[in-house]
Image 1 (spheres, rainbow, N blue to C red):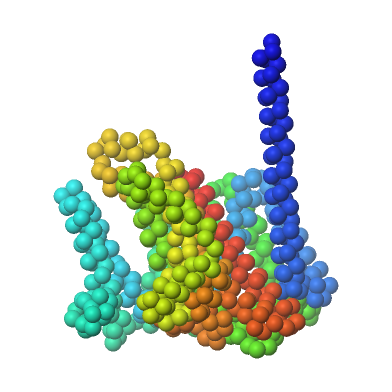
Image 2: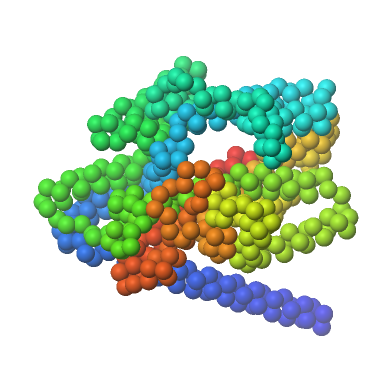
Length: 548
């Protein structure tokens, strides 16, 4: 009896402590969310200034946009929760797609020429085909030979002979690279046609798989043709709107094609969720009708600092004329460099440590150091980049390549840890089943481990990239310029970034006008991009988890 009483008292005490602890965690979470939300609302109010609009402007959009959207959402919810979820997701997809289409347009208009893009794709496609052919004979070709052939194919295609290794030794080019041959052709198609063929056509083919689903080949072809027609129309209509055809194609491909493919796929393949398309339709139609109405009546809108001039203008010494365009472009180039340098190394290290490395003292020391490096302050990585790349390797300070390498070192431990956790989550039964079928270690990793852990790896890498895009201290340490008046033309040129630009506005150009106008506008743009990146990570994770 005494034992039972003590056990009962212990269980009661444990349940009470667990309940209290759970509610304390909930309270702490709500406390943090509320204060972060208040801070963001305060900053967004300074940047967008919604109260400066005429009352009639608010009333017009309330009647044409808010009321119809709420009505459509309520009707979709009454029909099916999945229908409402699809409608809300389509709205978010439109916003995120248009946001990233602006960044993509910036790259292909001011940084990378369409012919250079075509040459890069060709230089990647040829060695990829060679690698696929070699891997198809993996039972007869040893892994070392496959690795050597793959590295040689990509090196020769991208750099030629002797390439960067020869330039370090002072030896000139002997065999030109495939990239250089294609980029130097004297005659090429129109730039917007090259973009439509290299960017729009693959996107249309991918979208057709979602629209046509498991239907016959003719339906797939028709769906791809319809989506590709949208891309071509973007390039053809752009000159009539005063825009170059190249950004027209990019916006149509990145900004319009994904939402259209998603809506068409819902309409064709999910009859229960079709009613959810009323929600994005209400948003689009309501926005257009509201804009036409306020323009006809003459109601003034908010005097927002986040406008087209701010997003496309260069820096200025006055807050009224300050722009964010070079900083946005610099951040995009830095993130592309970070992804190219950190992700292959990080994922490769995670695969080796989880699948190949022996469990000994050396690997345990590596594990502890990787965990410790993930918590090192970012300024330390800036000092590391300064000492290693600038001082020791004598590289120019503040360039895109140097900044990308420094930020890549910063997120490398995070990428390794997140990828290892995703690989470790793959059940051992899946590996055992692969080995039981006669698969080798590499075949098991390639066909079982990596596909099943892909969602976790992808989520971790995107979130790590989100941390890198908001870092300021490493870029300051390596001498990146706080202010740039133009976009960098290559990896060897100096580049600023969005956090650096906001830092400059709040310190070097500290004034009441910058604090109330440029700084809040820059913060809103930076937070919006971070939220878009995190939303992509969440959607991709949920998609791949649902298909596993």
